[in-house]
Length: 269
Image (cartoon, rainbow, N blue to C red; front, side, top):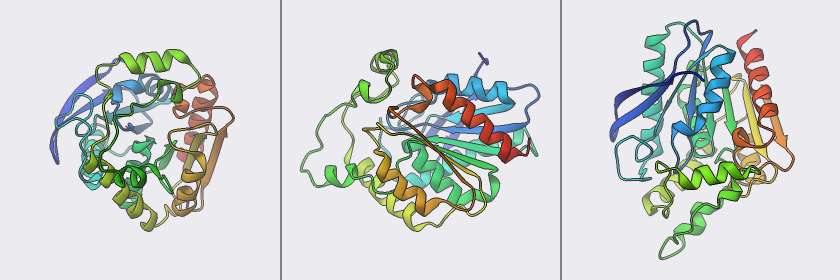
């Protein structure tokens, strides 16, 4: 495994903890953007794959997540989170000037990464979206219609067919297991609309990964968002039977191979 180290940056809403998986001779930089309620430490295996492939890997804990500052899972404006991720990209570019930068965003991180590509796409060489919260994701509007948001935890079984993934998630003290917060839900709703209207990614190579048994972010809803976001270089990989976290699925070796093959094409290798 790549030996990780941590940095602390000043974010828009307090300090942001960034994990770096270094590479002595990197060919490119990979920015990993995690999902709702979790933290970047859950992407250790993906980072190891990318380091072995030639990347120096960086990823933040978003505000209110993991080791970063802020009230737990409170995000009032995703534009601020995108700005924070851009600061992480600046850290990476300072460490590795001139290298191409690719971004991998999962779930809520896919929403953040999609918006990042709309704002800073000319700084990216490739974009990978895994189970992205884009398009017609209905949950925010259903929750906002309620007087009180229910305390319904994410089912560990919805993450992966591998029961060990769910067990580790349940036992992880850095994962949030409480209810969603209304300002965060409202921010989701606003940003879904912003991304929907924000334009496509033009010639940026885009890889979309999704499990066809994703119960948290259903495939059909994300597909409508991909159709709005896609430019001229879309590759999609839909995995039969896979659930929400394709990087933690029972066929993850296949998923990782698809990611590295896609990046080889985008990087011109």
